[in-house]
Image (tube, rainbow, N blue to C red; front, side, top):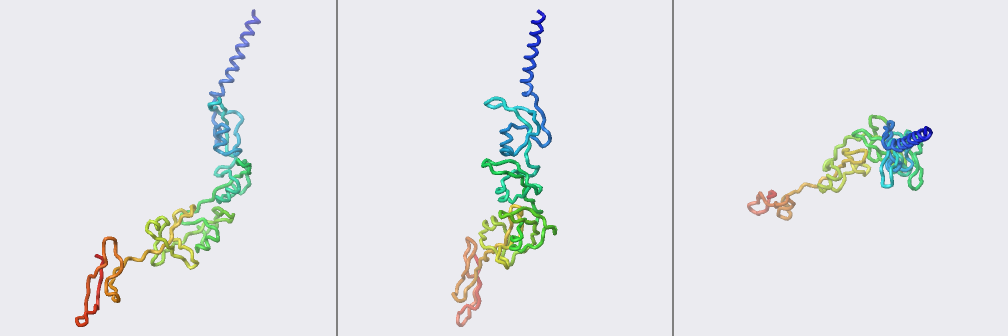
Length: 266
């Protein structure tokens, strides 16, 4: 009789223990270490990319209910250092990114099984400076580095380094106005004023990192209304709603030839 009671108590203890182990993961939500996030493997793949993450600890940090059942969540972190992105060398080159900390840190493979590495984005130049290759700076007539420091800010698609150049303060030549491409289009300005090298003159900066600048555009000739002595009449253009008309005329009393005439827009 005592053996039966002991067996029954032991069996009950084992059942309760098993139930507690089954229930515990659903309630034991744990915080992840700094720099890690509690995600399912699918969530980590979506956030960091396939193979671009590491598990911070072996124990689960929670769970997620799905149509197929409950899926455990773990603490994951990106393989790349903070501020760096996991890219193929081709994509990094196109975007002007450089190796993170100057080191070739592998961080996985893309969907085509091409190797991925950690790359850092190009540095932003201070306001009033532009990120250019030496060739681009020469064509624009820029010769001074920003703050007199040769600071690399990225690479062009060919892999040539780009540096922060000081944008000189330039006034547009007479007959030209400084405007962005959008402003010029809105005002009907189409032709650029060119420098000695035949390049458009840059007269302002909108966003040097994005390559957005203001340029000198040729201003349209003002509308003129004048008296053409050869034709003997008023010629030229006026603002909409007005006509170029004779305002003052003086003639020679003998020959009746016009000696002076003035036309106005009326």
